[in-house]
Image (cartoon, rainbow, N blue to C red; front, side, top):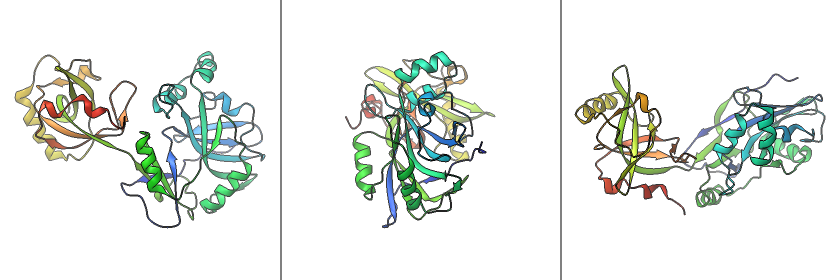
Length: 318
């Protein structure tokens, strides 16, 4: 059996790269997965080198991902939200975290998955990572056996148009790739670039957590009528250590005993509640299944009123 490898990663960019040698693909918002077949059975290994073969039996039985004897494929396992029809990270994580065989067997029908394949590293006894992406894609197209659970990711030369469509459908974003790029195992560089679709909103701080006496994360909320609704904890972004210290002093006179949020926040036990008087601009990718912000980051503090921090900011593109 192969020794698992860490897949090539794209770098994050805010601007689409220019040039004729670039193609774009949908960023599927799934679980990165490499499929290994050595002639004795398929193994599915994620980017952290954890074996996930048991979680996705429909992908490995029967053994028909490719027409060749041995291979390593790179792609994403995705699951669609039954209500929206869009790829759902929440639903694929439910599959990915399952361990009980009876639960996995039921989930094959209840939470169906698809393996979206976009690269090939090894083919019929030969490593092809030193070949160009264009050559690897041609090879992948020749050997992959498409099926209901296995699909080949397609290219477009119009990255701007694809990004526009992804925004319209509230998808995660796109990945741009240089067709001349070799495959960098355990690498990450600008030959592959991901452009994520992010959203901004204004919120109020309703709680803080501390590390060594300094605020290190904030609990934020928006207003739904008279109710102040929790939408997530945020500990990353554009604040430096001096700004965190300033915030620590600002919240001292605002501390209160009871929570200001209408709903029960995550990490309530470690959160110190404050009066929602400090506004903040937060960037995020999407709402999670639990109606909290996914991948939030603090952009800046903002002098805003509750009227500017409404829940309606979370209804976009609809």
